Image 1 (cartoon, rainbow, N blue to C red):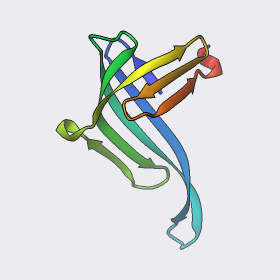
Image 2: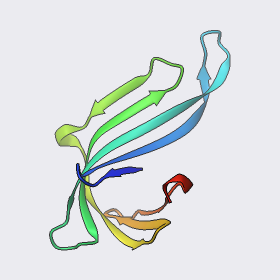
Image 3: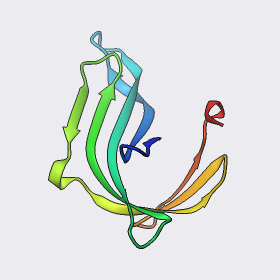
Length: 111
């Protein structure tokens, strides 16, 4: 996750392996893929620990393949909020509007 406070943007990236993709020579081979979600946010006017979010873009990419799709979400992009429950130098615990709990830690290089 990367956060740009000045632009009020968040970018979430999830990387994962896809073990079942077939190659051109009909061999099954594991490939690396990623899902990137672009999110805009605004401070919540009544709760300083909460931000209002809108998902506005999605990108699906599979390495070593022609699959690299950008999907603008526009007016259909989901909206919601995130509330910070705990934060220190190393961790952040956030709760989402649907009850999800996110526990995030900083990379060693970012500390």
